[in-house]
Amino acid sequence: DAGITQSPRYKITETGRQVTLMCHQTWSHSYMFWYRQDLGHGLRLIYYSAAADITDKGEVPDGYVVSRSKTENFPLTLESATRSQTSVYFCASSESTGSAFFGQGTRLTVV
Amino acid sequence: QQQVKQSPQSLIVQKGGISIINCAYENTAFDYFPWYQQFPGKGPALLIAIRPDVSEKKEGRFTISFNKSAKQFSLHIMDSQPGDSATYFCAASKGQGAQKLVFGQGTRLTINP
Image (cartoon, rainbow over all chains, first blue to last red; front, side):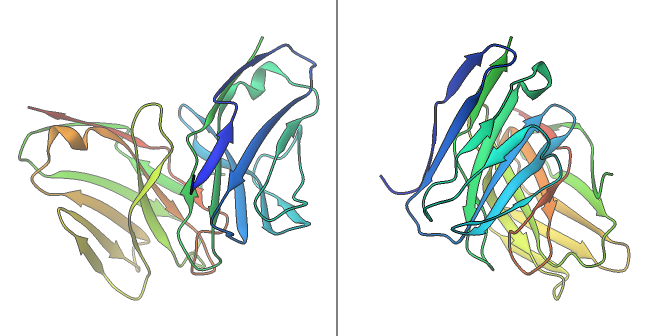
């Protein structure tokens, strides 16, 4: 399927556990992004990547790790989940001068 | 640090009316201003975008008005329909593209039939 796919769609995890959210795009876009969406804050950038093996911090990177070994994949890892990381996470991709296209989101609950 | 401020937080408009959502930005280096529409349970979808070399862009019933000197831009939805009921986000970035978008807080729009 063409587009951008996130998995899982829903995840419940316990405080202190490591969890990885997956993102896959089929457009070969150079840029990929992770945002979190919380009421009252809109969407906030966690990390982004301009190309394979190039990543950089966004506005709220603490507690998250990313990697990009292949252009099409951009996983986000919460190394030790906290309740404050309960949120809806969106992956997006774009070309350098194009628009960003978002996935369907992953709703993560940390209990 | 809120670089893009969006208002109102919620808006109720009668069917056929005009919906207006406003955004103000601080960073004069921003050069790309998109609007996204989001339905419940879905990801944001690009609605329309503008660059600062024009003051207005229209696509169907959706229009962006841009005021560079005031550092403000707004979304107008003409002939609003119940299917337009969604959350709308303005955003801004620099580099003429969608790198590192900074989003407003969102506006929940309800169109009453």
